[in-house]
Length: 279
Image 1 (cartoon, rainbow, N blue to C red):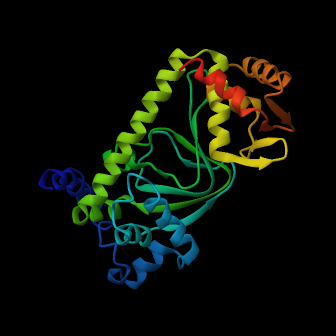
Image 2: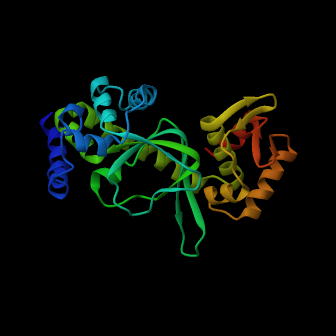
């Protein structure tokens, strides 16, 4: 317990020194002055939104061991904001003073390479808690974050998170377990991308997108996130021509359907066989 608690000491003092006015007891709204309450909350928090944000913490396997009270206190320190499609939520390397919960829509995590082309790392789905690492280490955002479609985010100040870490070590352990879990997932994705052939990589991405954004339709599972071939090319780090050729080959075999930029998985078992042949 003492070793865990000491982790918060690495972050909290620096945060207090850098932002003394911000480091107040956000976990207790009654402690805020009338003026700061209005500036901080902006408007009354909708009960449905509040519960959805709390659920994002409690439904995460790494965070569910933390108390519901701790999750509620974090949420009560934050506010909701709607971002329009294409708006940049956070620039690459910018100071990240908040963690975010995706309530609806999606976030595109991407970069611009040396030639000016966009490279997409991932589409982040609803229910995900993001920006934990840059909020903790204060070394800047890990990527550009853009709203994909109309996207609703819940914003929680870094100061509130650090303050609660000092009083709720179990919550802090959960956050670090979540960071470790995501690092393992990232390592597995990197391994697969280096070892798998191109067909397997395309199949894996389509299955992953269908798993997170899929809607059951008569033909199969429609990927609810509308993606252009340029988007898929940027997601896989290949040319548009390459992804177009592979998608047409999948469609010719009857594995997928493509209509008006919407992809439907018709034969997920076939795509799974392609993916598993490279595992």
